[in-house]
Length: 160
Image (cartoon, rainbow, N blue to C red; front, side):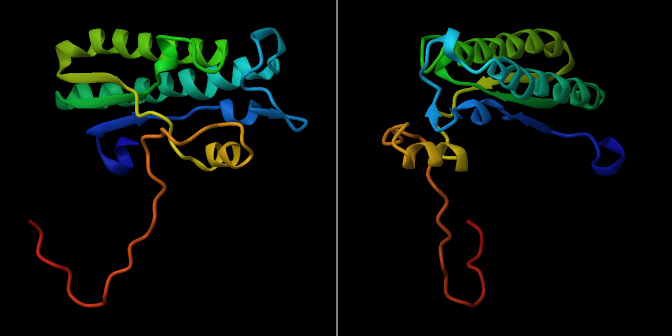
């Protein structure tokens, strides 16, 4: 990474593997009790979410330390602190938060900050599929769906 792009100023860890386990054979499994969750759900959420964030941070940290600055952001959710959805989701988000806190402790003396950020429900393609199927209520989501704005041709206005 450093050879191609230089040391990063910012790393955002937002990967999450739970989408693949939300629906099985036409059944929305997300809200089922833990003993009825698909067996692969644990690995999907912990590998794509927690481990991917750990591995990416492990690669970026030495580069940031060498520069004496940087920010690592782990995307998490309130399910780390209260029951939302299911046990596996809460456990993976709790692990993300603990990982961010522990990394912050290790990296603070080197000028690198680590935070866990709760952006709310993000309207990804997979989330919108669940919304359209009636499985998730997105009325209180904090992220907007991107709608391209059309502008008249011509020079761009000067920056403010």
